[in-house]
Amino acid sequence: MDSWELSLAPLPCGPSCPGPPEGACPSSGTLGGSRRKDWSCSLIVASLVGAFGSSFLYGYNLSVVNAPAPYIKAFYNESWERRHGHPTDPDTLTLLWSVTVSIFAIGGLVGTLMVKLIGRVLGRKYTLLVNNGFAISAALLMACSLQAGTFEMLIVGRFIMGVDGGIALSALPMYLSEISPKEIRGSLGQVTAIFICVGVFTGQVLGLPELLGKESTWPYLFGVIAVPAVVQLVSLPFLPESPRYLLLEKHDQVAAEQAFRTFLGKEDVSRELEEVLAERRVQRNVRLVSVLELLTSPFVRWQVGTVVITMACYQLCGLNAIWFYTNSIFGKAGIPPENIPYITLSTGGIEILAAVFSGLVIERLGRRPLLIGGFGLMTLFFGILTATLTLQDHAPWVPYLSIVCILAIIASFCSGPGGIPFILTGEFFQQSQRPAAFIVAGTVNWLSNFAVGLLFPFIQKSLDTYCFLVFAAICLTGAVYFYFVLPETKNRTYAEISQEFAKRNKAFAKRNKAFPPEEKIDLAVTDEKMIGKPEPDSSTLDSYVKNGVV
Image 1 (tube, one colour):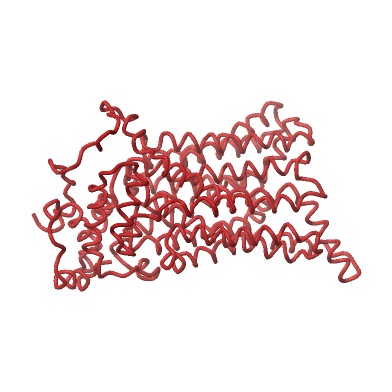
Image 2 (cartoon, helix red, strand yellow):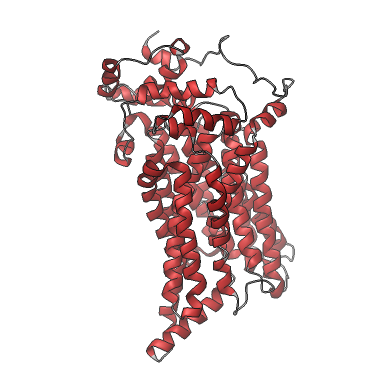
């Protein structure tokens, strides 16, 4: 076989593959028994604590500004009048409010660009810990802005909270992806999406007038942000760092082996350790790639393109537009205006249920069906919603059908497209490429978020209810692309996923007369003859680098 055939060959598992650890409960050949063994106490705590102090806060800050909006605008007007002797004009007030909302996305972009530098020095776990400093300082600024009479504190706090979100949505998926066994990597990664939904729902609940959504208490809505950050700050230090980071970047095999034992809940971690060691044999003399190198490399072109399209569809699929129409549709259905905030809570509940459902079935159905099915169903329901909004005055039951469409769109999004993009970004790339890949994904995510906030009012004004056809087209485009391009990554190692993409990168690499880095990594991982043998000599490694490894 030539080298390309070797890189595309299936991974063998001979007699040397270790069996179940001593003392483990037998699975009786069932999928459920295997899943239960994979979930150790440390994995559960790491995912819950990590997500509570990271993705929860991102979701919370998406919804927390909605309920107190009238009181915040009044505060802006009073502060302006106190300084200048006259109230602010409506255009200036609208600009200040727009900056308050959109600067969160700008901060997110800044945070994303900081991840690689911070993560290389501190690692995954300590990046999350340091990130809590941004959340606590932002909470103090925003909570004290009313008492200080300075609305700039609220705007700066929103920016800092965006930085926190940008770092969290890159560092947390990386951490969860690297500490989890491949059998439950999707389910554990889905915790990020579940806690985003829980954060959105919590912001809606606390914003009710009976709780903190009053004129005298709205600053406490922002002060609550400090609670999850403090919980993570005092809990996460007791958990290990990512074993892949310790071994591949810090070259600390003893600490990595102990981290594997802690997260996997078993003593025999030789198989997991050898998988990472094989990757290290090739990457020992290879540095972390830059964003520019990742974007220009022909060997990961399909991975980068898929991540960019996935993240763009994640933000541009129109879910933000749904929130714009929710209140008016509920009003058309005959729901009293004072009850609409409570009915809106049903949308947050649907988000959580759909995200939990996705986490439960992702390792059975796979990433590919959930992502394609989610965008496909969104396309269908956006089309129906366009028709019902156009005809809502023709029959009394039509607004109720619109409500059903809204809930169906939210459920379709959260059951697949809402969380899988973060999982795929961690699965598509090798260790040396992963930080740069998350920068690319995060940049697309936050720029798309900002573009939606900036352009949607103009789209809605021009097309009215037909604006949902734009989002239907985006969802359909994404579904078709994923159907033809996206491989299934369920229950596969990073090397096997690279092999799958190598089939597409082969033609491109041949045209450029280059040799893909994934091939060499795959050969190192798949060749079981290397297990227990000395590492390659320096001349071999030098030739790897000369041939374009990473």
